[in-house]
Image 1 (cartoon, rainbow, N blue to C red):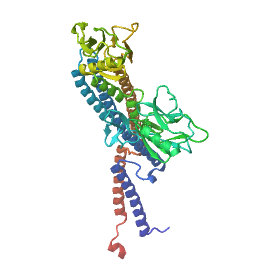
Image 2: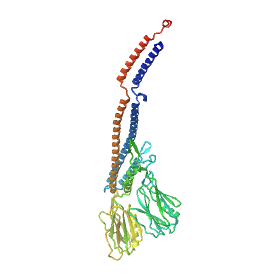
Image 3: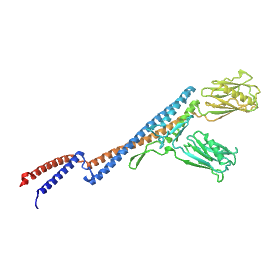
Image 4: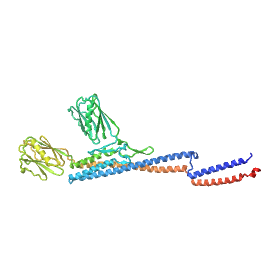
Length: 537
């Protein structure tokens, strides 16, 4: 084969290009620090690199989700801690006013502080993280809790909506009922036909009476049902034809108890769900979702209605009700009075004890002067009738004792708010013809202020359980975060092992390739040395 100058030049040039190409590749590896810069560098290795990078991106997103969850739970925990502190303070106040040293002035002042605690708890229940209410479930842009002027708090999540539809002409015979509930109270709605029906008296529920006439049309029955329900605090009713829509029945379903086969019937349809029943979750890993919110309704209004406990404490303090449910005492004056003067009975208020005595014909010597009690004089005539004696007794009590109220009905005097001690008849004239005082005490002597101590403890337990749950979730998120940190470190190392260059070897290769390239240039210069003389030859 003839070797021409062109063949020699082409061979030299091709080898130079191979050397410079390898030299440039090595330079690229050295500058990027990676041996795989495009799929053609290592197709199998590039597949692994893409998988590793995908895993690292997922871990980074999990870390962001976990950080958000930790922020949410940290705020929840600090909020619950503040709720617990407020409940402890409320208990301290209740203890301070449940003893005999408390008086009307201290109770009034403490009642104001309890009101402030109530409103502070309401503010805590409406805590926001950024623009999201943390106790509102999925309704994060809706204020979850609100109260009315009577300090009754309701939950404003997705409230249950119940439809009561009245069909055809009413054939109710009377006594039929259905049940429903407000956030704080269970009710039954019953029908009194022609004002001649017996109330069903459902246990543990308060009756709502609906008066209708026999044969009333569906629209009329619906209208009267709507009016009766709409008067209940905590429930709202709307009327449309023969349909009554009840809203805010946040604690309990509306149940149809009686369904007549013909004529009038009640059907109930519950729409929607309680907004806080569905948790807000974060994705903390593949097939791993963790709820980060606390059910606000369950926390504040469920087994222990925390707001209702504080409301009861507030009412007890405002009414000076240290010693229990107000006694209702009936004083019955029978037949014609035969009182001779000096007879009395006793009653008490939280701050003072009294005796009510009878003065016949303005004779002060009849005063029995009961030790340790203040006397209330009732002036009567020797032959006053039972009605007259009852009337003068009621007038004397209403005029002279602040904190008690006496109501008169014929010959009966009913005394209310005798909250500390029973009303006792000291002289019983049942066996004597003529006037007698018969006293019946109704109600109990429970201590309404101290009665809230147990519920306050239960409320604290409820908060502590919620905090324990929050703490467990925080621990789980922290453990998951640590797991992903270790896993990311391993994946990053595997990624580095797959795509990163061996820098020492790369530098050595670069120097070697540069030397080879320079040698190739020198050899090429000696082989190809064209000149005008060489051309003339």
